[in-house]
Amino acid sequence: MDTWRIRVGWIDKVKFEMAIQVIRPFFLSGITQIANRARGLRFPHHQASKSLNPDYSMVRPRGIANALWPRVGGRSNIALVVQRGSRVSRLLAQPPCWRAAYSSDAARSRPDVATHPQTVEINGNKYTTDPWFNVSSTVLSLTSRKLHLQKDHPVAITRKIVESVFPPPTYRYYNDFDPVVSTYENFDSLGFPPDHPGRARSDTYYINKDTLLRTHTSAHEAELFRAGASGGFLISGDVYRRDEVDRSHYPVFHQMEGARVWDRNTVPNGDLAAAVLQDLDRLPKHNMTVEDPSPPSHPDRNPLQAEHHTPEEAAAVAAHLKRSLELMVNEIFSRAKAAATAAAGAKNGTTTTTTAAERTEPLRVRWVEASFPFTSPSWELEVFYQGDWLEVLGCGVSKHELHAHASGPSRMGWAFGIGLERIAMLLFRIPDIRLFWSRDVRFLSQFRGVEDDLARLRPFVPFSKYPACYRDVSFWLRGASAAGGGGGAGAGKAAADWHGNDLMEVVRDAAGDCVEDVRLVDEFVHPATGRRSMCYRINYRSLEKTLTNAEANEMHGRVTRALVERLGVEVR
Ligand code: FA5
Ligand code: MG
Image (tube, rainbow, N blue to C red; front, top):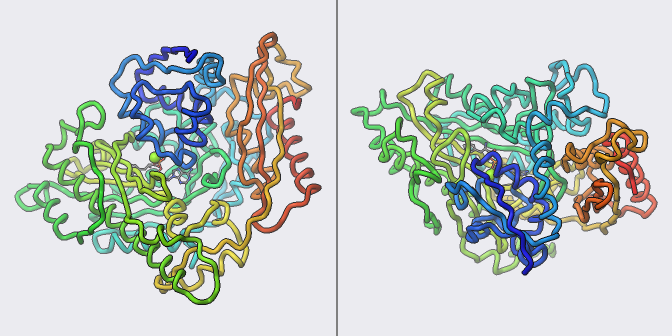
């Protein structure tokens, strides 16, 4: 095969994540399809692909980088072998392009084409914006929905089930922290480096340079550790990420954070490991098969915080963490299975969405090494679901610094973060993440009464599947040679400044929830002019009705005009 070896010398994880962002579109249908279709892409450690969740579309670049990094990590000079002339090889051949697009410097300098309000009001508080502001009106309007607090909403029901596994008085619940937080809370307090890609405006919704919509519930960890009140806590809340559009991604979703802390000064004989093991012994057992092939820690891939924790302490905390989360997954899946069985047994003539094989299939879960700035060692928990490994949560032994800064250097414990929609999609078999935001009675009525009586939980019965309407849009980015002459939109996106998430947001704003997914289907650089052309395929499919051709055309016209106006592209 005609291949080309690119030495990119990715010596640190941040750069690795940036590269994953760039090559991500080529993974979109899963790693096997890359091997078959785009062919050329292969990590030097071939096992890497095995650690990748095949349902790649549900994992963000950070998740993929986390999954791959333990396999490629520790190598100072990583090479990618790509097929000569393939699209991915052209992309990777332009390092200045991706580097600029993902660095926070680029984010800072990027001009904002759309005008933005001077102030915004979120949950009753007024904020002054600045040129960092990038929150769309659609996203702003969702800040008041708080699905995790709506009685009988599937997100709230899922939250309640998770809470039941982490009972008071050990755990305290915090469900109404404001989603507007400082960059300090969301990033600095957790040890994110200043150039971490998660900070870029392409990934995060900023209100102003110092204030943002939290990207995860971990933003409240440091504050609660500082308060130091009880042995553990759970936080649930809406989180915001600029991301692509498909059936498993929405710019707003819900997370649940959990943490547990022990203190050497208060456990018997100061023996923290023994105290943790005793608590572990008190937890219920389960009979689920769990694959956990990696060692409790690894010096390069998943290090122990050796200056602060003994191996025995870390192993005890990890064992307590893993058992607690396995119990949670077991609870969810037992309920899902009971619901499916009840629905299959019902003689009311409704069709069920599960097969007999799915109802009897044994649950398989596994632990995978991961990496987060605020835990070490770290893991992700994956569940085998409908033929694929699906990542449901990230977790680890909390970094000593978090406790030390919170005036508790004698403390140690674990933390996790779970995606509630992702769990709810498995629990209720909800096929499209947009449905969670539906106010359609045909959706909401299916969960009525479940919060107070979980025995009434049943798989979601889709009320219809309306036809898809595909429309393509092709355009030129404002390339180097066309600078200043870009069709009257001088401030448009130059190739080096382009980020797919900007387009996703414009599409979402112009066509709302009628867009099921948006995919990059073609991309090339003009050999003579160096200008970059892209073609995106948009699938318009309403959850509530059949769209007429005229409606789809009208919506596509709106989207196209918005792309020209807000991103300055030149439609071909
Ligand atoms: C985090 O957000 C970390 N804060 C989790 C954590 C907490 C780690 C405490 C260690 C200690 P991550 O980006 O992987 O990590 O997201 C955590 C979970 O949120 C994922 O496992 C997934 O279940 C869910 N999630 C992430 N992105 C999305 C998305 N775009 N759509 C739906 N669910 C998502
Ligand atoms: Mg992850």
